[in-house]
Image (cartoon, rainbow, N blue to C red; front, side, top):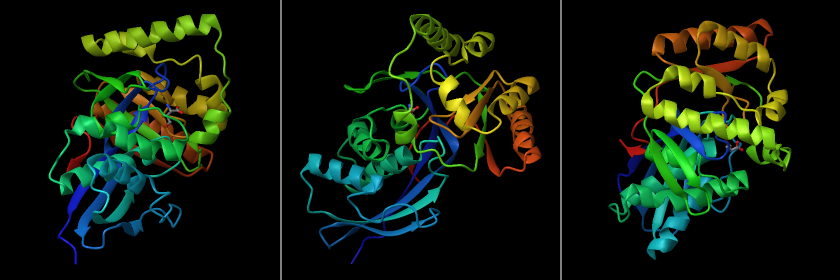
Amino acid sequence: MSTPGIKVFAPASVSNLGCGFDILGLALERPGDEIIARMTDRKELRITEITGDKGQLPRNIHENTVTIAAAALLKHLGEEGRGIDFEIHKRMPFASGLGSSAASAVAGVVAMNELLRRPLEKRDLLPFAMQGEQHASQAWHADNVAPSLLGGIILVRDNASLDIHRIPAPRGLYLAILHPHILIQTADSRKRLPKNVALSDLVTQTGNLGGLIQGLYQSDFKLISRCLQDVVIEPHRSKDIPYYTEIREAALGTGALGCLISGSGPSMFALCDNSLLAEACGIAMKSVLKKHQLRCDLYISGIHAEGAMKY
Ligand code: HSE
């Protein structure tokens, strides 16, 4: 026997935002994950259905980010004996740089918290969603999970203690996101990054990070644009993305504030100061891959203010 169940949406996210490797991220209005969770009298977690994954995500509850995160929350609450069935509807690509595993982990804990009638505040669900994300990315960074859970633009001051802060999103900020149809696993991509950073690059990167935060607080689009650079990670990861420079030039030539890699890629985002420009940038970016006969998806999205929610 099971209850009628609840439905939760958790948004995709763009992490790093260029100069904020592992510490900056924002939530998207679309795409995202949807989960339906129901209480049962079976005294165990189950994944009863996954759609949209072409059979590629694990059905085993000890390997799926949704149930790993949900089980961590149940353990914390001393409710391990609960029976919950999960239906997972992947409404976004995975291994895409759009925080797919983070969205799943977030949807899992939010659904669980709702079913148990909200024993925790949303903010306090973060460490449990992080456990699901850690399993997938084999690293502990909250720059996808925190915005997917809480919405908006989030600065992670410290990943270990999950010291996170909301940064204001200027009115009008819109993104064009191009997702080329290649897979990049975050864990693999991280292993290939160099372990050391040159001092001169550190100075440039931290200057841009400080300037970006200031620009977001002041809605200073020119300052934001000057700061949308990445001298540390982009030189390495951009090599994995076909026609990266051409796509970037197409977006900047159309008027984007900046165009960089979303998370560990292969998706690229162009940040724009209005939705019409984001649409024009998206078309320009997509036309590059079309010219080279490569398949891709295009998303045009504002910033999701609320983050994961029951609906
Ligand atoms: N900050 C992480 C990385 C995000 O760039 O590896 C992964 O989506």
